[in-house]
Length: 258
Image (tube, rainbow, N blue to C red; front, top):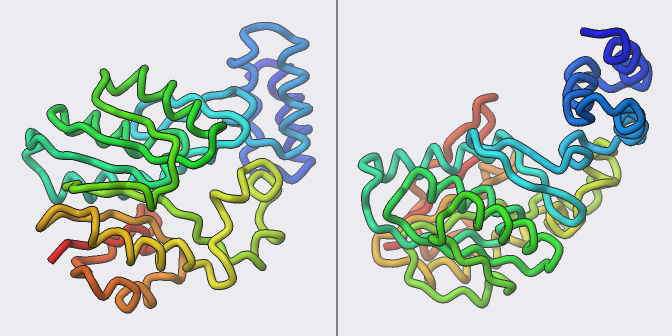
């Protein structure tokens, strides 16, 4: 670690940033030797802006995704949805029709299409800002097999074999206590799940039976502590399992159309 990176890491650590050394190194690499750009990146990180928002890139499922203002930064926990899709379809060659409801950066849809080479999919996104990133990522990685549509997810029309969603699931009253990287720099619409964090799931419970193909599956991300209530939220579907993420937190609800 050179002197500039070491000094920057000490500044970030003094500001209470746990990943100080890694962040300093990533921002140094992003600056490509431009000391002014490096200093500007460190200043933004000291303001608790996420590294991915500064660099404009976030890795998900070993693919690089463009991110920026107005789009939720993909998290490793969300890769659990892709893992569960591969459990359902281990052969990978089925000509599946996929949907990603609230696609954001397009990370879930694109990663799924990367794993299922004969699949096609539609990402539904109501935010024009997020849609621009999703369209850019799909064009780069999905080889024309992804359509990114500016629409609320209740406009989706099936049938789909696999439906993914990472909906907003944080109770509204808890958002103020989130880390500033999330609270101040992520789109609130992608976080706020209403009073109890479950508003989006109630909407999905109405929608999913209408758009899933017979025997089709839905893979939904949930927040910590929400697994216990999921069984009662989807009366029109079979709850197959709730799969944990790498931290053993229940993270992915697997549902099947009856």
